[in-house]
Length: 310
Image (tube, rainbow, N blue to C red):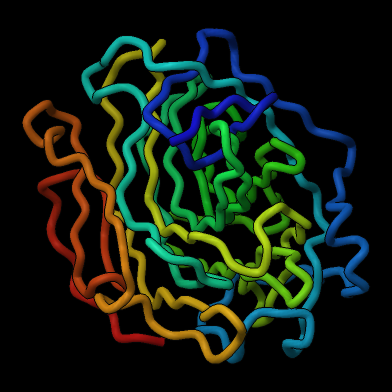
């Protein structure tokens, strides 16, 4: 369990919490550049369109055409405090997905992008993301996460590729990769042999390095796959989230080796909000294939057919 506070922790993963009432704080440099990616000797990623085919090989510096994100990166520090009042959709965090009970060296998969009813100038957000994390003791947690998010404070109404890591403690939105509802994005998080964790986006039919961070995780960590919704306690109301489809989720084993589908033989802990179905504005998790194909979003919407792997 963890409290999101951008100055101390903050990110798109955490405990049931709610934001402070102060206006969202956003900072953006004239042309923010990822210092970790800059040191990786990869060429800058050229302008490209979203990929329409699956990745042809695992993410990594040696993959064909590998490059680093070099466009503008919006950095946002948003403070969150403890739970406040409940709104029509219960305020605070709603986690739908799963995390491993053991440690792995990486996770990857595909997530659909949806348009949620996220309210401008609020602390509402919806995100589809993967994460690698490790508890440090005394409530401290180190992690790296990546995926897509729609927030009430950074380009409201738009869905954006993002990362968050506990070295910088800020959300990083990558403007060079424009998203639209209905599209699907491939994300990969993994550690190298030296224990550096990197986040990759499959874009333009090549792997784009978003960030590489030396975190106190080691070469393996607990990994997560979640659709996460946060409802601003200072602005009660209804937040709708069309179901997000997540599929082709694979885990990289410790010590190397080929990635494998995240299936039932993997020790897995799941997160959902079953009580909220009775409260209104609730969200449901629907496992189509445990645990590599699933949907999460508003309860009561039609169930999607399971896509074919690949």
